[in-house]
Image 1 (cartoon, rainbow, N blue to C red):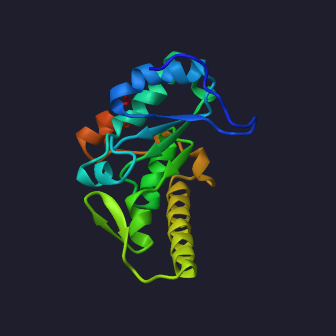
Image 2 (cartoon, rainbow, N blue to C red; image 1 turned 60 degrees about the horizontal axis):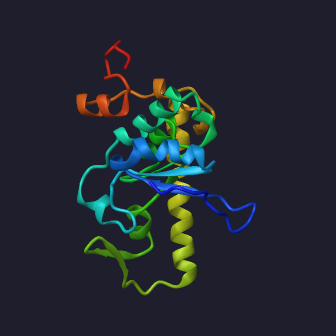
Length: 191
């Protein structure tokens, strides 16, 4: 990790750090020391670009490990966690919010909704769409994500997706249960 103080262009500028599984343990203390506003958790290990998101499953444990490390330091509320990687639906987004993310970044799903073909991990916009059509598609995607996230929250008895907690989730595979730190469906065991 670099040393020195992070400089902001303006007093209202948000400052963050791109974090992957490989540098999480060092990144969190550095970000807290620098008083950064957020960590962008790249669970695909592929940013910039979409190649990593499309080449395999995201590392769901990254968010769980970040939350755990912040809790161990008793500094969980001091920095926001922004999650990127593998989000295809509003339910995916709601799950990440329940696990501790403050915000989400939609990658390939957004590119595809805007008419992109994915070539070598990068979006290529060949569709003859007007700016208005792209705006409408983007709006529709965000509305669909929001509606589906809201439905998931209501299914757990919550009125707001920001109120979802890990206890509202159940994993359906052992791998996801360990990575996300949520119990298996039908299990009373807590992680």
